[in-house]
Length: 243
View 1 (cartoon, rainbow, N blue to C red):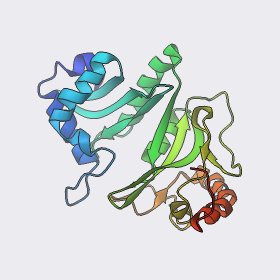
View 2: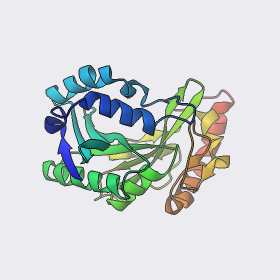
View 3: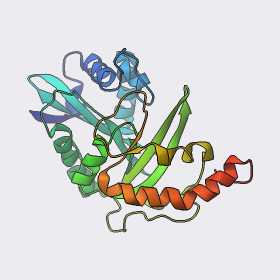
């Protein structure tokens, strides 16, 4: 296996088809339905047009793991303006153990040199990405929400590379602080549901049914919820709440 970046990816045969297929398989349920946030990336045209443009303008950097001439894993850094976001981590289920961890370690070695601030938004669908963030030494930065899309809630567990700071600890009215940005209590109707959905199981299924977290993070996330729920319940009753 070897790791290549986007300047090498574009020289692979059918690279855009390979990446679309890799994403589709990694983020589809048993019936073949692909879910947010990766649905647009399951079409070769999106990679060939949108992503290629982002590579060329420097808005996005990608890396892939190659095995026997085929891409088996992908991850990238996306420029979000004030910070970079590490994401779009996808790999085949039968990829060798540790493939994604090695890919992320390779990416982080480059970004440590460049001293770029970045964060990771791990969805609650499983805890695999959280495990990788833990292994490579990133900082737990609290929880948050993407939104309810097509009737499905997408929740977030944040990590960042501000390792000089302590991990996020529960604060009244605040759910997280990725890169020092306070994530205020919002989406009260969803926040109230989460305590009953918490799970330390490794697996997950699409669409998400549980809020999967690492065992070591469970006590702190429970504390975040315990402190934030009174504010959320006020919001759920129609009173003022930060958003």
